Image (cartoon, rainbow, N blue to C red):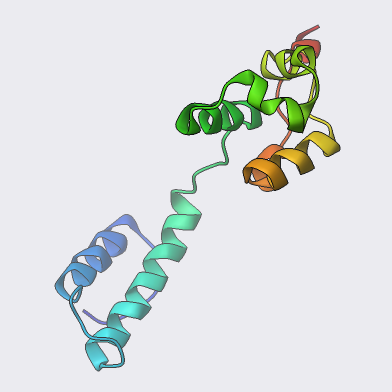
Length: 125
């Protein structure tokens, strides 16, 4: 296979097969260089055609809580009172910039996810 831009789904599938054939190639060899170029081309094609959007901020917080065994009270240092945590998680109040900073710094939740706009109960009114 000649290395060329990936423009179609057929090109993409062919590149994946070629990657599979060279998967065990050693770095800094012609085969390793070919593999590296193919992986870069496939990644660019996938980013353009199969991009995965960031999760909803509240869903991300809930996932983070579940995956780490956190309770709502564990969010109080980052969001505020028990009532404030409830309002945020129930979409009755949007996250503030301070809450976003606290959640990012304290729990490591990506600020890219937290700053996205999302629906709240007040948006439906």
